[in-house]
Length: 91
Image (cartoon, rainbow, N blue to C red; front, side, top):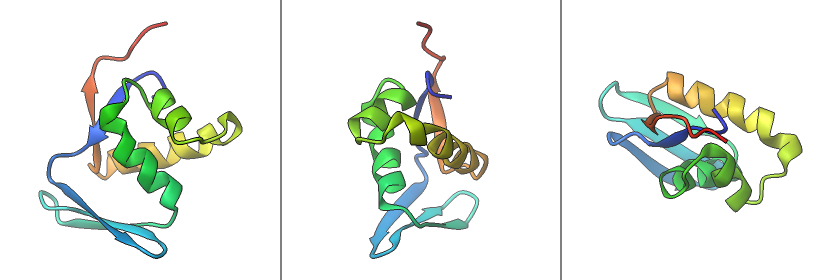
């Protein structure tokens, strides 16, 4: 996932909250509580970044924490809150 391009799904709206944010998918009517403001920032940065790795780097997430963020992003993908935009980039 780190070398793939992802973005917020078109039918998803994010509402900032003191604890992080609420994400709502209007297509499947799923409401998700995002409890980390840093994860919200990464989600919002995905569309402007060529890869997840660059979105994490741009948001100042230490590489030691990337596995936790990848796991969270994979869960968000399963919930159809984020979607892949292009084929994976190869180094």
